Image 1 (tube, helix red, strand yellow):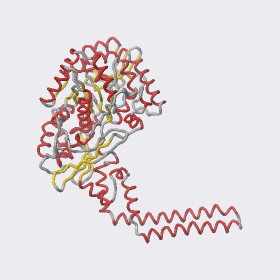
Image 2: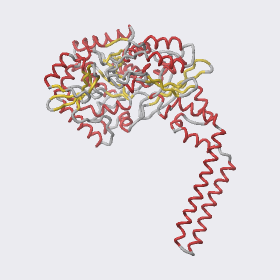
Image 3: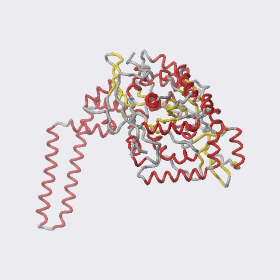
Length: 572
């Protein structure tokens, strides 16, 4: 065991995440052996001013969200709205579309269905081998928030993960990144036929190429005591005859078993049937909803924030899918049209098709959270920076559907620092955030700081002499002709430029002498900010699981200390 567990399977002896305006960020170390230590740094989500202000509960955002995410009254108001909409029949209906990861999760689902339970939801498009780290971070944050709300509200609250299997963005789903055995960032991509239809991940087969992807992935990872079982899990789940969504869901369920996670497939035909009223309303009131979205977007921008979702004229919030792929539905001359294929539908025709085959239809990024809140008693949604921004534009559409928006909770941001990376940071006297700087800039700065003092002093002396000498020359030459100041200034600039070139040559030579040491810095950067991006947006969880075992997930969850202010009576 790495560390103790609490009731929810999360580590209880770690510290870090207090999502408040007065933030305390600490470090939890995960020991595996004497020589192996993993630091788990957890902090509130950073991002745009909108995300930061929402997390602080800024009053300017009151009209765009259902309440500050760190105040209990936000959740109590949402629960009142849920109780008005969800009777026993509606609760029982949702059980058919929710999949439990464990018997414990099944028991939790029954509590929610048969009583007055609630969900904390989050979701993600299926990706290879679970995709980037933040997919797991969102799930673990939802687990922690659900536990906090259950205690604060005194009623069952369970984490529910929405697998966005209707999404069809192949370029986003077809690859993963890993830092390989040489400490170099490697992209591993699943090939697809160039003429493959843009179908949803629920229908997209992995195909034989997944075997080469798995082989390359295994070759990138170290051989450890944990690798065998974890890689066997992937090998069993990701097979050629399975779909991207099916394999992704299987791995998520197995990895998160200690947390009793509940999962829903967004493309499930039974879910589409439950969402039929929202789908119909989107078609019948498409023009009005476009106007509402545009108005709220303008209001958000006038409040000083950037909008995240473009409002496309004529576009509905629904997609239609057939053998040709998944396409956005547009309004056109009283009917509807698919721009890609050019197919047209009369209004009555498309509505009839929706009622007969709702599985062919799916929600876009705007409608999906509305469907989620319509079908499930969703108290809160845990989202990344983009999703938090999306919700600021959605409020009017929630109201148009007669639904209250959930409380939007920004997920925790996690940074994993291995011992080998910590050693490099300490060697150079750097903080993790320093590696956000592009390598060429950071390495130049470090080399300059290591320049011999004699060289540095000589360069400064020459620079000073050039400035002083040309200044004296300009004063003296003014007596001959004031217009000489121009050529003299040009000469000074040329001299300074040539000196700068000499300094660059010295730095280049120093870099060559320190090439081995600087290569360590580049490799550390690949671990923390691969390709200049945050680790959690690029790297894959299995890179760390094979080194530290599945106890890593409870340790990360335990480091997410979610604390909701339970003082009643907050405004708005």
